[in-house]
Image (cartoon, rainbow, N blue to C red; front, side):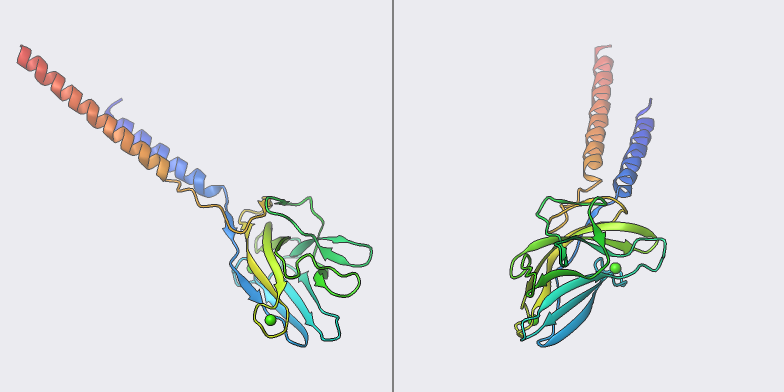
Length: 230
Ligand SMILES: [Ca+2]
Ligand SMILES: [Ca+2]
């Protein structure tokens, strides 16, 4: 094989490596955001989890001086009736549906009990549920990206008065979602650093170019030596 042929064959290999790297799907960051409660009464706010302009969840925050404050979430229906609705992983404690709390490293996947129904993240009436109140924790979500569903997300949250107006807010500290449908996602505050798909092939290319150059120099000096000897 000539050096040129070898180089062409190598370039083709680099090309196919890059395609494999982009087709596998990836873990994406969920940015920090604050969903504000009202000082007295109920606030209903929309949450667009992946920032594509389509609201995925409705957050219900009630702040009451009478001591009936709560924060709950419901999953919005998807536009396609054949796709599962946006939903939260939850459990039933015998009285209410409560958001399941996850730890860093836990896996969010289809084996969990997801529902789009009214699910408490915090409430201060019976049964008191304070897992996320003024402390950080992860919730697991299943959400829709139109045309392909479902996707899984893990979101780090806390319920606190972030804005200082005497009303509790939902503070999304960060989180991750999987941009490929039906692929489980591991709970963590932010996506792992992106591996540069070209870093290894470029190094490889430099190696081969150096090797080819060295081969050429050896061939040239070998010929010169033979010429001098004759
Ligand atoms: Ca969205
Ligand atoms: Ca507030």
